[in-house]
Image (cartoon, rainbow, N blue to C red):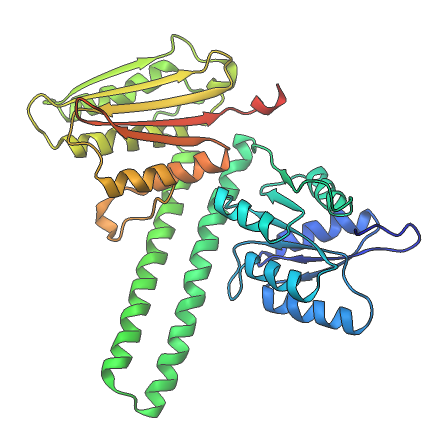
Length: 378
């Protein structure tokens, strides 16, 4: 069991490739009397851990980000448990999944802290690491307010871009080295092709960031509050543009105060993407029908978007990706589909979920379930 000495600071190691997170956690914990070191990646963390042991000043707690270049947090956690078993470890992440949570707990993590987190949650996580080892590992999370969601959403996309750029730099270094040694042009061409694919991925992510910014800050309608009439106007626009398709809309008569504060740009993004996907699936077929529904739960604490159509339904692969949350950016820029990927990120970070299935009578059904700000307050 780790225990916090009362007469001296306890050593804590923070490992995250985002310097702002390291600095934030360091400031919070140093004010609590801890002695804090930071590392930008797993390799530096391993060096600091080894140096600390050699100096007979071992760390008591290590807080590790999951998604880092060179070595991810789970790999580092495994290394620490093998080589520094006295160090109590915890995970922090903005990309929480059931699999990573289970893996972290099995590897011995004392806590699982979800970003974005508050000052009190960091303190709670570290305090839990110093409790008796017999206590259960703790998952610490909160649903972020809508106003704070956008920076974290974009931060995750930029994180994805940086990982790709880092890989491109490695390919470029190898390409340069092999050009000096006269390696076969076929191998050099292969490296160049990999770089091209990476650059295309970065372009897709940057376009998605651009779209997220535009949709969040400047909804076309200029509306400041979400209303059933606004959702109806989106459906009406599709009806005008696709006259041969039967569109219908069903909304709660009124939205709760919490629902009306949901960002209009986000709501437009979700509804528009669902309608676009359904319209594309129906493909102008005779008798095509699409139903859109946006409702509040009875307690007003969740906003539910539903869309169904009588098209061919989801392919097994698409259905599997939606149900597992493994949605990706489209391989080609012209394919569209950025919104569904963005919906996944919004939903995940708000603590919501996506349901999808093929209906028995034919066609597809999808539901986006989003907890509303303040729902966790009871």
